[in-house]
Every structure is written in C-alpha cells, then in structure tokens.
Image 1 (cartoon, rainbow, N blue to C red):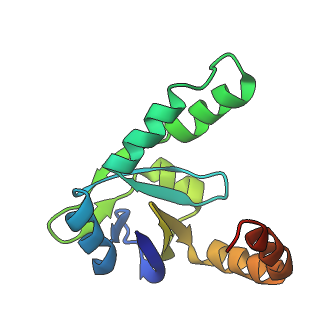
Image 2 (cartoon, rainbow, N blue to C red; image 1 turned 180 degrees about the horizontal axis):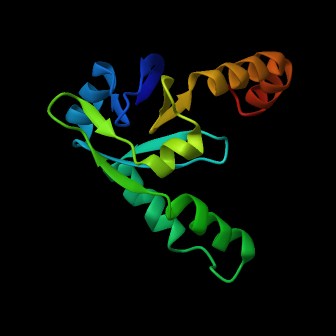
Length: 147
C-alpha cells in the first residue's frame, strides 16, 4: 500500500522522480508500469498497472448511455496514459496531463493506498488546508465507518 507524501520537482521535460519508497512497493508487489490519468480534484492519479486493470474492468460495466458514465469515461479513462519508470526511477508525464494538474515545478506525490496522487504543491497546500478546516466533519464520517 502506498502511504506518505513526498515533495519533489518536475523537470522541464516533464519528468518526475518516483520516491524510492513507492518504487520499492511497485517492484515488490507490481511491476514498473504506471497508468496516469486526470483526477476530478485537479491532480493526477497514478495506478500500478495491476490496479488499473481493476478500474478498467469496473468501468467496462458502466452503462455508457448514461450521461454520467459517458462523462466519466471521456474524462478519466480517455486521459489514461502508460508511463513506465525509467532506469533512473523517473516517469515522463505527458504535457496534456501536466497542464490539467498545473504541474510546473514544485510537486507533491501522495500515497493513497492503492494509487499515488501527483499534485502541484500550491494546489496540495489548498487541499490540505481545506481538509484540516473540515476535520470535525471527517471525524464523524470516519466514526460512522468504524474507524
């Protein structure tokens, strides 16, 4: 499982170094292929290939005549790109995905169990501030789930 957050930079060519902790998980449990796509929260999400296959399997069962399902497929699935990790532990993020997430220099990679989110640092700081502000609401929801 991916957990923790790591601050990095993205280079001018759009390459990101994957934290060694995350690479170790990929090599131990998965392989070196990541599928990266858009996220509705304004970041990117990177799935190990094995986890992405589960997403695709579930998505393939959506009723495509429903507007919400079609919108999801157009946005989330169509943005998916395989980004293999190179020998230096980096991935190349396509420009269209970098633009969507506003990745320019400072970024944060966030482990969220079965996937990794990739945030522009300025957006991440806003999301964390909002989460801290709403901590009481989150506690109630989590207590209702037995956590």
